Image (cartoon, rainbow, N blue to C red; front, side, top):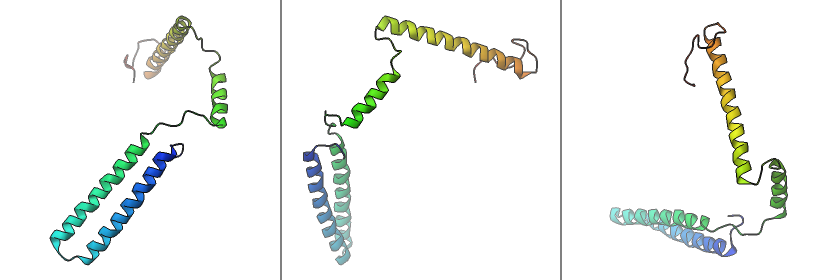
Length: 135
């Protein structure tokens, strides 16, 4: 639980200690007992310990990470920011850039589809063979 609060870490450690002690007690009782009903109850109690252990882990992971970022994370953010230098901040400019890129992508896909159709039967004529649906 790196980065989690000390309070949650302490809580988890306390519960782990308690569950370990309970499991030790249950195991010892199971080894001694010969009564089937008593052994069944011990197994039921052991399964309950497993449920508590899984629930504890789930609750502990719900704690949000602390707000402060280590210096290494800030350096990584700087590197990442330089990768996005060419992306416009204005929503209209961003939309126009995306439309232009998707249009070019669609054109390239159409060229590829035409090339694949021509190569399908050995002829270079568009539409002369192959499927018109993408694979």
